[in-house]
Image 1 (cartoon, rainbow, N blue to C red):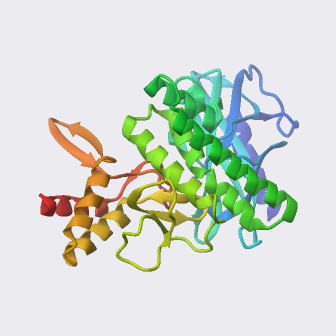
Image 2 (image 1 turned 45 degrees about the vertical axis):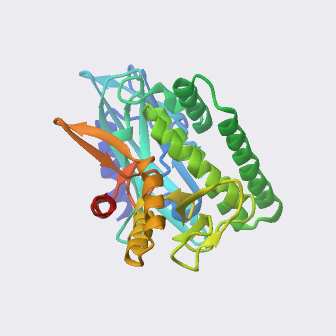
Length: 360
């Protein structure tokens, strides 16, 4: 049975003019002049795992959003057919091992270099691997060359493009975040306590996420404002605590809250907005939570508190125009389920429209 399953896979690979992986698994095709890079996307299922390792031929990929050269493919009639087997060995935060092995095939227009971005996702309670077509393609045409930059390099370059130079206060927070994340990584290497590694991943997530976004698009001043606020919130929290044990934990930086349960931190950050913790992603602004608080304040007659939150949120809105009509969006800058960044909550849009109408 195993032989029957394996033979068709290799027939498919060879018929597609496949990738030539450097360990000699596949013979080198004639005129194999297209360089193939592969990266793992920090998205979907990866936040449930402490260790992620993907093998393509003799190449091992264990870092997120970092393109690794894996071999060559050939051009045929103006197209590049890439096919390879990706094998993932992963371990979740509780020590359970998982395994996935999938054939990846993708037809791309010709280019000297191509990038295949792999996404790990759940299907029927199992882990699967697939190519994210939106982040795969010819480098320099479909895919920006900035993908080879580190998240911090891409982010700093974008900040300079916006402000002319990196503001001292923002640079200070970025350096502080690096020290915090390095501290947690060092503690993990000394103790083997996975909580420290989780805190390392969480504390530096804001840099990785906005840095990855900066590789693919120009960041707006509002997006940099959201980044700066989220960065400060994570620095304030992780300079005091390790990551919470549960998702959806709420952290606030003022005494104003409609609930008793949130963690209250009194530091340099002055905001009434709540931040929500998600495993592997640290603290993030989530418009749904903030608008829910506004709704509660209105219900309780605390109009002043409601208006204060709405005023803060208004400064973080994305404004656009479609067919002559202006619109505003509450964009979220963290990964949720299979979403890419940024994403929009329909619930937040509807609730927000009603609450701002009520405020006016």
